[in-house]
Amino acid sequence: MSGAAQRIIILGAASAIAEATARLWAARGARLLLVGRNDVRLKTIAADLIVRGAAQAIVWPLDCATADASGELERMAQSLGGLDILLLAYGVLGDQAALERDPGETARLIQTNFTSAVGWCLAATAIFERQRFGALLVIGSVAGDRGRKSNFIYGASKCGLECFVEGIAHKLAPVGARAAVIKPGYVDTPMTASMTKTGPLWAVPDHVAAIIVRTGDKGGPVVYAPGFWRFIMLVIRYMPVAVFNKLNI
Picture (cartoon, helix red, strand yellow):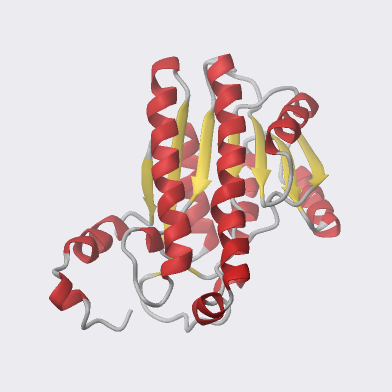
């Protein structure tokens, strides 16, 4: 595909980070297929991407958490004329206290963040393995690095997904394709609207988007966004239990 417009599918394209990333790819003249539940919102984003330089911006209304990933992804790739990059950007944060009270809500979060994501990753792996090129990019979270009382259910779903994507990266490496999980820390998005957003640890979607685009070009299998989170989480992961248990995080 050297010199040709990249063919990119974005799952959860209406999220703040996904939209910011799509804008960067649009500026490169990419051919984009936008997947999400909000048809009206996707059409607005698509129109903006065309103005920004996208060669194509197809809207594909779909609930990624319940769809037949394998069949849908094959149809999407055919509609786009092939597939170079799949960005999996959908997910839910959930409320820890509510999740602990309601096993049904916990099951729905795991279905969205892990089970359905696994299906899309496997579908993309089959395509990339067959064609012997391509990049699977999955948005994870630093919350998966160590279980914490404030969000361990969400964190567990992201931890499992990271391990899964690392395994796919190992599987794809011999054929020349790649997989990577991008792990943001605190990002100022609608998903974190209820959180106090002060201090140097907070990033904006544009910053994370630039890291995702670079990872699409080269890198992985685990990328922290921004990079300083790698060192923060290294400290947290290896902090002695006696010290860790005193932290209110």
